[in-house]
Length: 412
Image (cartoon, rainbow, N blue to C red):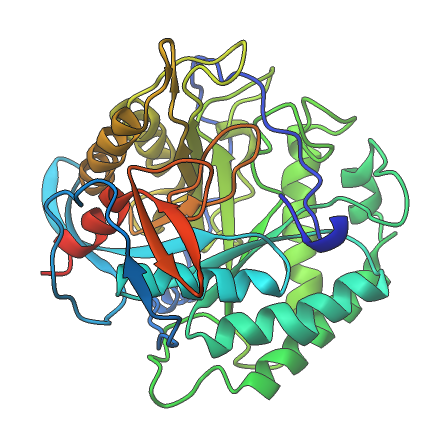
């Protein structure tokens, strides 16, 4: 969504209002072979070794609310979720988006220094192009930095071009082979980067994927050129593109260079096509994700929405599509503090506390906070606003201790 000097950016516009559409289960691949099930078991969980960050001191402006004083550095939050009517122990892996440039790694380190526990996942948005800067930045700096910090990269791979306007028929062009050379180079460089980084270090659990690949996300919206409601494609062409890209990439990857392919949707369909119609099929989807935000009243079309409203229904709907064997995460979420009465940081803090409970109940296994102020104040660390202020590295940071507390409370 943002990047250094305007490069390595997603280029995305913030989405229009998400309205609810009736659901109709679409036809989808029913490949439930042993190999598919085995791969899902392998990719179902991750682990990582955290890196040290900067020491941060507290300059108290408001008291932190019921925070846990001590925590381990193990990854994952232990929460209880309800799946299929029964309660099961779920391990929520914590992720962050802090930009898409190499400097994002250090920014995530600073948040970790404040929280204590380490992030399992770090999301970056990457474009669809063979520009030297984009590829060199990704494979030479961004990925090595995330791995060195002990996190698993989530690569939100967007079919945006950086060298020319993105064509409206980009889906058809991809499956026609127009970008095969790019896909081959991308896969070869990914394989080489994984080998150089020695991602499968003995200290790291072998079931951790080298990276999550979140390809062409939020296609059930109308703000991206790969979304059929926005470009010239159809749901069938979108699903075909997804299968084609995975096949082309994995053809070039060396054995053992595991990627977890993640199909992520917007929490609400916007436009004529439903998320059910856009499912690429069981054979190619290792994980699923839901993106949803509380925009508050920051946009002319938006209103304050509770965490339960944002997560419960959409996650249940995605689970109906992908089945119970596929892990589901909330791959983007955040809240504005803007209400009808103006900015209310205490209300945002309450929303954050409620969100952790809603995520537990939804039975998801990953939650990735979008920590960049874009069009409104999403950040919980170093944003425009906060309910507290801390000092570190000779500067001050606005923070929301409710986010820290939500993580620490689940590490006890």
